[in-house]
Image (cartoon, rainbow, N blue to C red; front, side, top):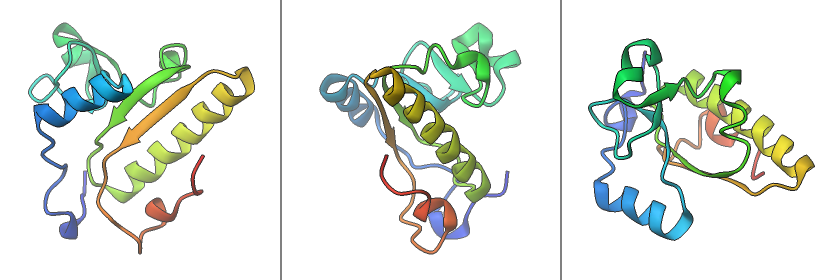
Length: 128
């Protein structure tokens, strides 16, 4: 998957207390990038939904079939630190946010990534 050497690993080790606070204060009780080994909540998106479905995966975040699930609400994303993947995630999030805005639905993504000011995926398209 690549990864970014300066990120200190492939993903941040976000503890359960952080996940619980995101759920309690923001309603973000659904992970967009998880696996059965690190998921905090019973349902989540994963990179291998065919294998992970038995453990709670609802599919890949990038699957258009999940658009209804991701149409409104609050979600947390702690993706692998791979700049092309983070850029693709940002594009998908912007599209979902634009659709939610057009419907006047509330949609929030809480994203956990390194401070990569020199990477195009960090600069992205600005706040939504």
